[in-house]
Length: 464
Image (cartoon, rainbow, N blue to C red):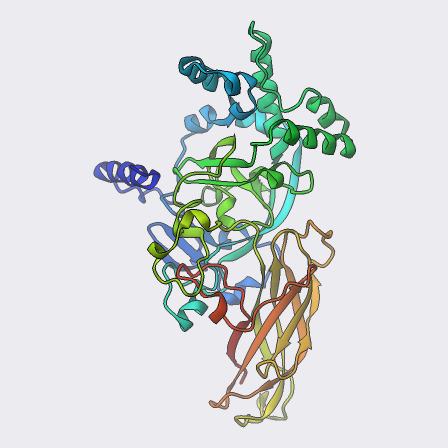
């Protein structure tokens, strides 16, 4: 059976005893709920741009299964499995299956929450976006499969936790202590001098150590994650180990204990990547030659197929990469009229279809891969003319590590009045530091799963 079959079978057994959704957390009524088994809820547009750091209770929610419920005893006994088998010289040279099996067991470190929290705490402010955000825009062109998200499956938080590399080193140190007790001297260390390198905080030494690790283990390509709910995903090893990648294991969100809906007790934060790679309720890490198995990494769920493909059976999914680092996106959250003669009681003179009026607009923009958003362009006449937005928040992020969105405002956008005489239609597009921009239409990027819609964001809005 496939991984998904096993998960479904497990869920059926749970359902026989009781509804697994009976223990779901209480959610804010402000969220726009698309489904509650599992919970999928987005941030309404009027709240999306209200605060740069999204409050925990209105952070969007995207689940695949019921939220794990851990008792105090469960949390106390929680252990993060860290599999460093790939680094073991013994495993790569052994031909005895029994010894290899035994070796695999001994190459697995188990870390408690207390041990992970004893590591230096770091904080990373990053934006997470569901890969299906704005799927409804694709559906306007041609039907896709999945939740019909508007623009609200995106939020930003300040995450606190331990650096991934520090967690791997802690596991390496634990296994090395076990090695010292063994007669065969098999090594599971990430690098002989990695511990001293970490302590010195010497960037050049860190980079040298990373290069040595990759040279000595050329088959090391991926870091796999496994969740308490059975989900599996992975990221490339260069992102995982890079001192500039800022990958962490988070146990705090916005200076509070990580809530259940967002991964308690531990989740991976992979800045600049699709949110699905930021695995919640993480229970296992594994250094690997291959990407994770399962529907969320190798299946159709998170693969962007060509616009010509409407049946996934027509293509070899193994040849299609899954979403990892993402593109550039933007949205509009507020529009209001700024000109027009007042005719009484604060109301402005009636607009005429086809005439041009001035409006002001504001919104958000974000690029994956740590690329800064350097410009946001807004049009009220379908691209005949453009106005530049002023970036008001988030502009001071360092190049290459701009993990969070920016907020923008444009005080004057010429906009053509729609045929109803009461509304205008605005579009926006963002440009990142690599000068990637957003395509004008979704036609050329449409895909059957409705993923990664970064066409111009279009909003028709009543302004009188």
